[in-house]
Image (cartoon, rainbow, N blue to C red; front, side, top):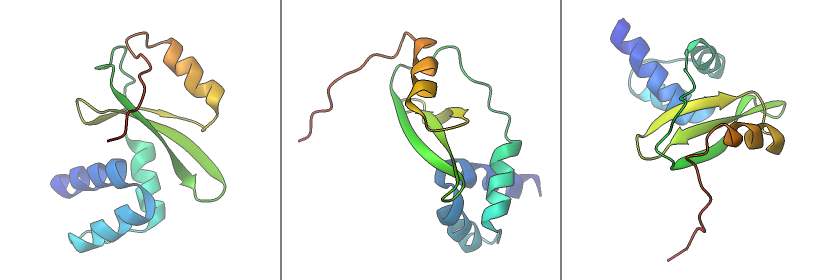
Length: 110
């Protein structure tokens, strides 16, 4: 049972709502989008005081179409490092002020 809970936590954090539901059913742990949301809310993510400096930022839905948050991933360590309560630029700006190791670089496309 503990292994399936660990797997569900990983699926929820990596894939989120509907995709997480589809994959969890495929691996034999059928759950609803509400369960994925509850799993994410129970995860105790301790915000890191220092990251690798290479992050990814995306929004995710607490409740699709109504309430959104921001997920911040450490792309070098491949892990979620923080969940912000909304997707406002000001909230992200405040988070970035607390992490001077992160610098802005130009995204060059091939």
